Structures are given as C-alpha cells and as structure tokens.
Length: 278
Length: 256
Image (tube, rainbow over all chains, first blue to last red; front, side, top):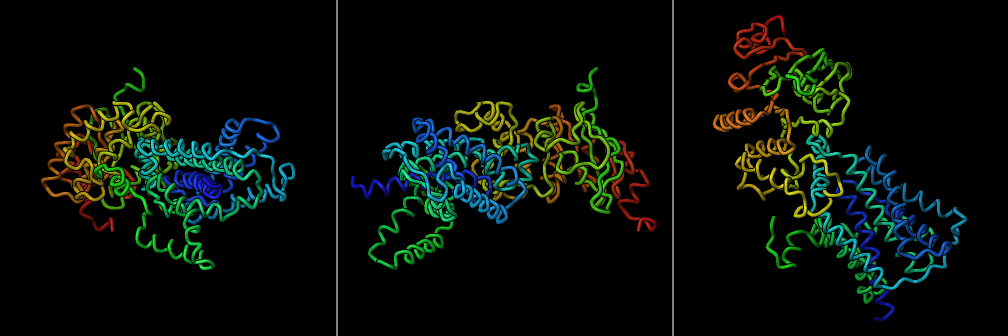
C-alpha cells in the first residue's frame, strides 16, 4: 500500500473515532462541539507517557482515555444545565480552553508543539477503531442505549419513569471523551508531532460533520462519514481550486436528500441482507 | 409492626406548594392504604397534577412531609421514587418518540444490577427483563403492536403503553393522571376492568380524574381538591352527597 493511501486510511480511522465520540454524547441529546479538547488531552497525555516515561503505547493510551473520561465527567455536570445551542456553545468554549491551555503549557512544548513519538502501524490504529466500533454496536443493542434514546426523546418523562438521567447523561460525556482521547493518542502517534493548532474548533466540527453526514442514528454512520470526509476532497482534486466548493455543495446535497445521513437502520439492514425489523 | 409493613402505603402530611405568588396546594394531607384504589377529584386548576408532581419528585414541596412505605421521599430525585415503588402515567401520555412498544416495556424496568450489565446487548440481558416485559405486554393485550413505534398508535393504545411502561417498574403504588381522558365508554370500561384486576393482584392505585362516573364505581376512597385544598374525603357515596363537593363542581354564587 502506498504511503499516500496508508495516510488516508489512518485519517479515516482517527476521524471515525472522533465521530463516534460525538455520536455517543449525541445519543443523549447533547451536542458537543468541544471533542477536539478531549482529543487534545488524549494526545498530550499519551505522548508524554510514551516519550518521557517510555511507556508502551497501549498502556499510555488507556491511561489517557481514562483521564479524558474523568475530564468528560467533570464537563458533563455543568452540561446538564444547558440544552441545545447553549450546550453547543459551552462545549465549544471548553474545546478552545483546552487548546489555549496547551498553547501556553511550556512543559509540553507550548506553541512549538511536542515531538518524539514512535510512529504507529496502520493496523494498530484500525484495531482500536474496530474494537470501539464493536463496543458501540454492542452498546446500541443494550438496554442502556434504550435509556439514552429515551432521555434523548423526553428527558423529564425519562426521569419520571425511573431513569437516572444525571448518571446516564454524564456517563455519556465520560465515554465520549474517552473515545475522543483514543483518537487523540492515535493521532499523536500517527503524525509523531502534535501542536495545539491540531485540536482547534475545525477538528470538533469535523467530528460532528462525519456523524451528521454518515448517519447520526447508527454508530457505523461515523465510519461512513469519516471515509467520505477524508476521501471526497481527494477524489475532487480533478476540479482543482474548486475542490472545497464542490465538497461543500456535495455535503449540502447529501443532507438535502438524506436528512438522517447516508446510513440509517433500514439501509443498514438491506446492506447486511437482513429484513428491516422496524 | 414496622413502618414499612404498616397499613399505610403513602401519606402526605400538610403538603404545600406555591409557584411565585400562587398557592397551588396548601396543607394537603391524604393517605393511601395498601391495596386500595383512591381517587382525587376536583375542578380544573384545583392542583391535582401538582399533587402528582410532588409525589413523584418532579417538583419539590415547600412544606409538609411525604411518607412512602415508611420512608420520607419528599426530597428524593424522581428515579429513586420510582425505584422505591411509585410509578406514574401522564395526562398527556409522553411516550418516547423513537421507541417501539416493546422498547417502552424494556427501558424503564428498575433493576439493581447496575449500568455495566445494562450496557450489554439485550439478548445477553437478565432474562427476567424479557419475562417482565412479556407479562405486561400480554396483560394489556399489546402483542399486535409490539414492534411498532408507540407514538404512531391510536390514542387509546398509547394510554395503555404509558400505563404498561409504568407497570414494568414493578410499583407498589400506581399514580394515574386522568386515565380515561379522551377515551370512549368502551375503552373506559375496559380500563376499569384492567385496574380492578391489577388491584386484585395487590397493587394500590391513586388516580386523578374528571370523570365522576368512572371514579365513583372504581375507587374505595375519594379526596376532593378545590383551589389547592382538600375540601372533602371519604367513600364515594358520601362524597356524592356532600354539599361542598356539589358547590365545587357545579359552581355557587359565593365561589365566583
């Protein structure tokens, strides 16, 4: 495989995880525009552990994910008081806060960035993507997922029929943050150099875009969205400087024709040769 | 005899609630004994739904005590109150838009195993969850609607799903907020039969209703709420003859 395609595949994998991190939080009706912040935390902590403390990557990655998860839970509590667009703006603020923190945090290079990570094989990235996709797919078949959807549909009613809405919503933030941190750790060890600019607002938007485009009602939609977001601009190179405009137009077209995103349950059932159950 | 096993299941002592300058409920006291069906009637705006919202923890009381099964529940969060054994239905039904009937019966069941096991695919879940849902599905005769989105179903069926969802939590006390609103005679009759059967199985019921005929035939005891206060309590026959109740319902020069 050429280095070019290997790079694209790594990008798809990392973006898929970013998309899943948004997807999990979105399942409880919370839109986070700050997941690049969790990604940054995962990136910097795992890099510190592998470069400075010579930890193996997998251990570093798990610790990074756990730490980001705790931060996610801390963010999840104030998020409980905000809804819709207000929450989106607050999480956006959180993401920028994290980015600015690493911009001035000298021990990890500040604005100059941080380097020294070992490059990670493509297979390692995709092993994580596969594992987390399987985890999300299993979660989607669980009672907990039903509870998340119930909260998504009517939070007050969900509480009054016995669901611990606080625990589930905050837990969603914690899990989403952990997945974003895994994406960050893999990103750091794919590019072997990180700087705060990698984790800006555009990154968070990319995650959300991959979910919306790929299908916000199924986890694998994140994979489809990520693949499109990475590959489309490449395939559109033939239109040269009109590339980004064409990309934007295609995005609008997809959303106009399929509001639920490219993948949804009925389509998925057809693709896997099962009869649509619902 | 301990409090938990005493005859009284739910007790409200001088419960008050205001919204801004408006006194929604003042010094409301009522008791639901085990295995009884108790009705709360009263004109629109009397505070009936507020009463339910206080019992289920949707609102906080300003004053007074709520005791359920021997425990003070007035400050508890709604989900804890459900787990303690109080389930409710809604006047405006409030089903989950994206869930099928079957999913409604799985989602609310209160269990002690915790989140980890609940995060596993349903086919690996505790078989008791399926058994319970199946039981309730059959009890309400909802088998034919099992895999349909609940919100797309006829009104009467949605009412049943709302009630079925409440029952899956395994309540000791069921609160029904205007259960026959919008139902025709036949449906109301069927519902009365269902409630009687549930009551015979040991479930206590507290219901709010406008339909006097319905409560008179079903309830063992009635409370009459008017302008946020209990103005009468007793057996249906006594309530029907109470002049205060007639005033509240039919209007009176002095009341206007």
